Image (cartoon, rainbow, N blue to C red; front, side, top):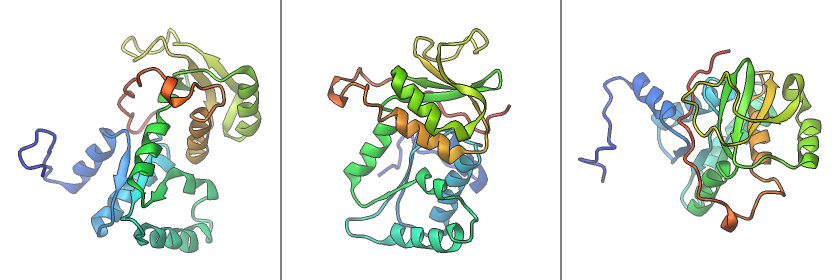
Length: 220
């Protein structure tokens, strides 16, 4: 199916394949498979969980009525979550579904308002299509105070210190002193931004802006 397609890339080493798998992706879709599938799944989850890769949708898709990923999740809950090896919030880093339309919706909804992120002057800057209303911003500050190292979540614009090639300078920004320890909670913040009551209905949204390439291994 992909033979001869210019998008098909060959790699000699598995580690370089996985690096590009994450670095060049805006979402990850996983289907039932063997050890390699689990290796790539945990690679994606670990990089996002630890903040070494930007948040992105990670969707585990089964055939209709299939239980492959639900059985995987049972292991995660029984062997990892129950033993406090991961936090309850970490389960928000992925979605399990046997509905292809639900998988597509999950990925597109992730970029409904959120566009991309970048660290600027030790602050996390989230590029969004529409800023939250004042009351919505107050609720975000109340609900996500635990991920702040200082100050509050505020609305901003492109900073002078952002690189000159920073994409989409016209978009509003959400600026916060992120503690860099709560990637799963950051994902939940992004989900909230994508579900703001003040957002236009999907049919009235402007043509989506292609998200910027994700940043691999952000540095302070």
